[in-house]
Image 1 (tube, helix red, strand yellow):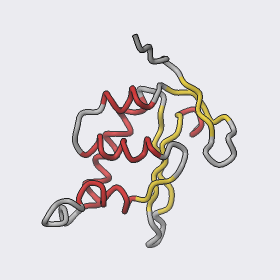
Image 2 (cartoon, helix red, strand yellow):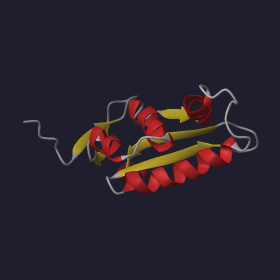
Image 3 (cartoon, helix red, strand yellow):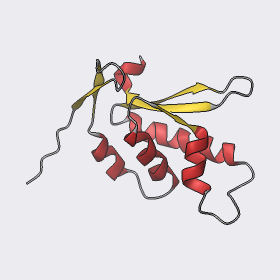
Image 4 (cartoon, helix red, strand yellow):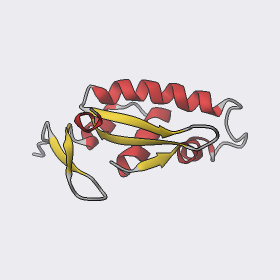
Length: 117
């Protein structure tokens, strides 16, 4: 019988320092229904503590589509990210946004919520 702990400690991928505690990410991913939010969380979960470019999320979601995805792809990513943030917060996680100023690229980072305070 596999028992998943309710809380797990996480370390920074760069310095290996403690960054916080949260529900095991595998448990969180299982709770997200299949679709765009699940694909986004899968990518973020593979890189806990590291940044993921918005362009990478767009690529994961829309590269397989023959039409290349919707015209307002930024709006789709932003609305799905908003919903995903609310979902992961209930498990002790936070998705932090960086960049995006004057033409610079936007990045997202999945970290335990206590690290973002």
